Length: 157
Ligand code: URA
Image (cartoon, rainbow, N blue to C red; front, top):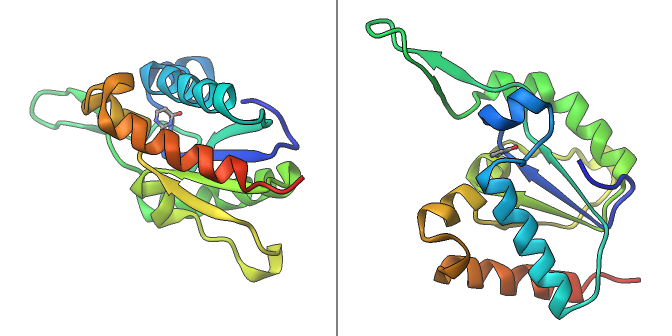
């Protein structure tokens, strides 16, 4: 969701239940925190256009054979590989000045081949992790805010 082309492209992990229901990335609690993060940064520095997507676009789930309970899990390498063409196409269309990898899964699976050109990338903690640490009042939130603010200030143009 968001703008394409954009100055900053945020890449998360995979849709959660809210995102799976609506087909929009980051619209649940983690997404609301991400929106607030972006809003807080732009209040303090210059505005930037942004898009938001995920490493994979289908919700990865597993079913407990004993109880039948379905839970959300981290995407596998095979799933990330299967979604890579879509992700690379999104990156090329958005042509961002900066790619922000949200969390470890994004960092692990975002592989940009040299043939696509050079993109600035950096990692922030995943908003769901920051939520678990206390959300917008946590030290993590403030740290990530500063990193994003600095990165935004260094965007050329
Ligand atoms: N977490 C993600 O990584 N992506 C979403 O879209 C929602 C939650």
